[in-house]
Image (cartoon, rainbow, N blue to C red; front, side, top):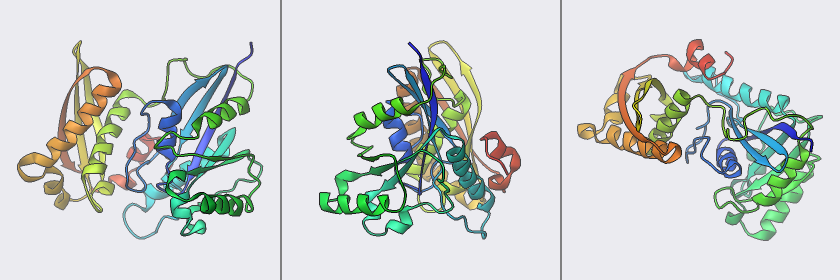
Length: 299
């Protein structure tokens, strides 16, 4: 029996639920999730198999208009460009809309600069459990009037509702071809980058205001000691004044971040983890070509 394989770009405004949907479809945690906007900084592939089809999901950064002022303009521009390029390269595009937010302002939920002409695009209305059905149906009609979507799917990625039909439709839509990844592989993230993302996810949830956006995590070493992995990481921050915030009183905050990250890694990998975290200042990391290129972003 012939196989099918293809790429599906998941695009949308920040915080629409792209990463949550990716994880729900894959069935495991492959992309970090946070209640804060602009958590995803680079495209992450999540892979699942349905029947004879291998579907390669591309979870992308949220699409928005970066502000030219501020040190993160280079990073934000590279993030948005990577999302637009992922959509252009994919066999199929899923445009995801947060219906709870769209019920207040549809225009703000439609990502700017996204050119879908000539692409196979389906509409994902996410968080449908948060709005009344009449409101949902009106939104679906309004958004469909703006573009000729192949299909509309109403889902709750968090509650994993409405995903069975989406999974089958994606598998059917993939072009004929051999699998591009081993059947047991669910992501393309290297181990060091995966571990860094898990720690950044923990930091994003623990820290407030502008502090999470001014940090990056780098995994320096991973040592395999049989039953235990020894991981050493550095949390880099742009400003010295953020260091005491991340460390916390008597190191309490950094310990909480480390514990959350360690437990998440242990659950994912089913291994004992020894995690060491350090905090250092690295001014200008968010417009460093070396840093951004290491994430696959073009500057």
